Every structure is written in C-alpha cells, then in structure tokens.
Length: 387
Image (cartoon, rainbow, N blue to C red; front, side, top):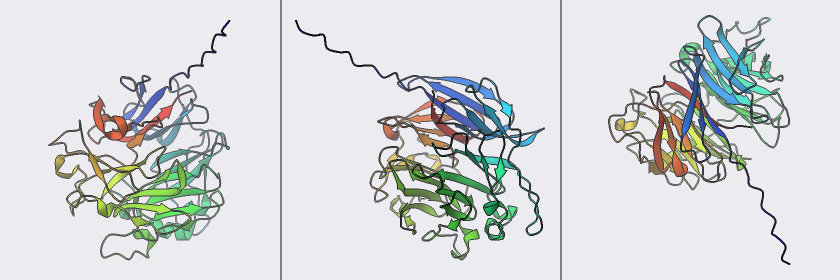
C-alpha cells in the first residue's frame, strides 16, 4: 500500500503594517497578505508633530513614537500592544547640564529612532534636533545622552549653530547599527558629516572623504558636509549608500572614500534629494527620489513630475520609475525618512509625500498606486512585520 505523502506545513502570510508619521499625528496602515488592500488605524496623537514611528523587530509588538506636543514638548511615546494604548517615556531624551565647556542646549524634538542590535533586547538609539545622540536600554522608557557626541567640543564645532542647519532645524539622523557587531555604529548630521564608532559610541571618527560640499566652502571643514540620508545594504553590510545635499554616493568598506554615483543620473533631473532606499536582498540595487535642486531649492519634484529612480548596478546607470505617479502639476517631494521598502522576495516600495499622500510601488517600484490621500504632511514611512 502506498504511503500518503506528508503534507508540507504552510507558512502563514506575513502581516505587514505601514507606520506613517506626520505633522499632525501618526497612522498605522495594516495590509493584507498580497499588499492589495490597506486598513487605516489612526490618527494617533492627532495634532502633535510625529517625526518618526518605529516597531521593535525583536518582538514585533513594541512601537516607539518620536513626538513634539504642544503641552509636553519633545518626548517619546511607547506602546507594547501595537498602538492600542500609549505611555510617555519616563525620561525622554534631554541634554545633560554642562560642567563648563560648551553652552547648554535643549532638545527641540527627537527626529530619528533606531532599534538596537538583535542581541541587545530593549536597546534603542534616538537622534535629535539640535544634533544629539541618545540611547535607551529599557525599551524606550528612559534615555541617556552619549557624551562622546553631545558634549565633545569638536562635535559641537562640527554641528555649527541652529542657523547653520536645515530650515526646520539641524538634525542627527540615519543611526545605523551593523547587524554583525553591536559596537559598530554610524550616523549622519545635517550639517556635520557622517561619523563611525567601533566601540559602541565611546569614540567616533568622521567618514566624509570624497563627499562634496556647496561651492565656495572648504570640504575639509566637516561643518559644511550635509548628508541627507545614509543607508546600509541589508544583504552586504560592508556597503553604504548616501543621498547628500551634494549628490548620491556609495561607499564600500573597508574603504573610506565615498564615490559620487549620482553623476550618471539624467542631467535635467540631477542627483539632489532626501531619501535613499537599498534593496533588501541585492546590494547593487537602490532607489532615490530626486527633487528640484536648483539654486532656489523649491523642494518639489523636478518640473512637477515626480518619479523614483533605481540603479541595479551600484550606480553605473539609473532608470526612471513613474508608472502610476502624476504626470504633471504634482509639486510635492519626499522627506528623508518617508521612503522605504519591505523585505518580501519581490519587494514593494512605499513613500509618503509632503502633500499627505501615501503610495506603494509594486514590483520594486515598477507600478505605483495610491494607498491614502489627504493626510497631513508626511515626515516618515516605515514598513513593519508584525508578530
């Protein structure tokens, strides 16, 4: 008698959610298994400025929200049940009172959140405006400043003044933890360059060689370097990409010199923008979303025709991806945290616009479709895999 073949256990479909942070609150969009339909959960913190909303990938349930409220000021909110209830951090990021040296500073808002290494459950990093770096070891309940950045006279010089920063304040962003080594960290400052630590943040060195600065300024002065977004290739942690105020770059470690790969972009479009996304499975593939980088810096799509651009060979060539996006009179852009990709075998891209629209780019950005309209200005979009 023939034996009945054993049935293969079916793998349950992943539950994906889009975490959307805006000028007037936050939303969570839950997707179906095929990423075809999305259900909105929100608003959370309606009326508050939310700069970043992140899920802890180590438990698939804990959310942190970097918010600035009218009555509480800058703070971090925490949820352990996917946003059903929230609690404010007992000790949000705050600069230490200096004992001599540089003058005291106050956190205007927390801007960037990064979960710590997989081996360090409960660890998080936060970047603030003005530029500061903070760490939590209890899941975001309490935060401590990293003095090697926040209080070092050399860093304070590189940070410049509030007037030197971006229009809505200078920012420490793009906090990266090497997945192979919890002590290996990167971050970017706008302005103030890219920096690397090999000892869990006790010491740092600049990583700006090869990066250009605005004409007329000295590239050896780190203050003038303005990285907009720095990303690590998930499939090859020795490769970094960067969208900079002065172009698109790639860095292959152990090298220390950035290569400007954006010069291959169409000249009428240029290589100026804010976000950068790297393919989850292919380190040669990355996406950007250019904006008008002319002298007046209108921060809109070039010619009112928004499009993503992809390279599939590490920056040697670029391809325009605009099928489904507006063909004319779309005067919005994408901020540095507002474009991301999921980790599916054929990933989809997601982006949020300054006009409050949420989009999905299916088949690696080949076909764009709208998920939501009429949200407040979108500051950040993250895709999360739920437990």
